[in-house]
Image (cartoon, rainbow, N blue to C red; front, top):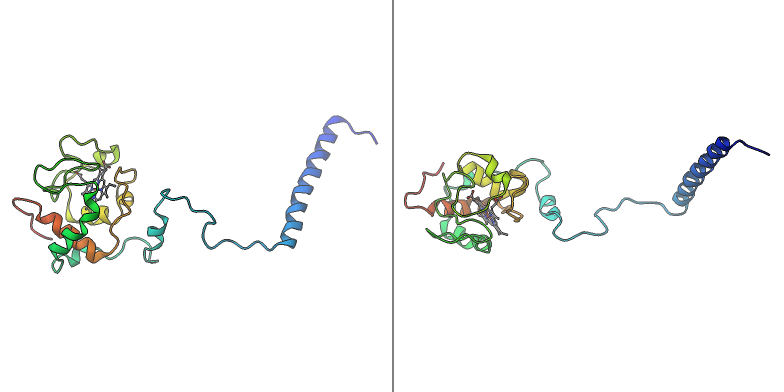
Length: 179
Ligand code: HEC
């Protein structure tokens, strides 16, 4: 048999395709592929997948913590703020660490603390920190401000978040009224 060049090429493609599909088909007969329930390999720190999975299936946001502010406990908030202290100081005139000082954060214009190099994302958001924005940001920093430099998974429990927010509210010479 003698084929012109392009026919050979066409034949080669067909044979290759047949081999690939055939091998795949044969492979499926031999081992029944089962989709993995969770990734076989998880790479630490790539995404807070665990935390995302922990969210209720309803999709969207959890109970917002603001309805719980009234009964929230400032002392419990101060205790929970320990996780923030790795990166934030809370006292008046406190230093910027990995994150900016948070004195008087309620009502403070976003990304405005002197001497701190904010991400473009946070700088571009505009407006002041309302209770609602704080609730959303502390629940899910990257969900609220995609690209934020705050590498923190968030405080997922509404009661705990409410306590932290009430504590933040207390960090002021004249605390803003609670919503
Ligand atoms: C791993 C370090 C880290 C932890 C832990 C952390 N933060 Fe942050 N935080 C940052 C960084 C960095 C920024 C600046 C974000 C940016 O520029 O995008 C920030 C910004 C903020 C802002 C906005 C400040 C402003 O001036 O606009 C608030 C509010 C805040 N954090 C609250 C919290 C609270 C509350 C906690 C604890 C529940 C916390 N953070 C935990 C690093 C952290």
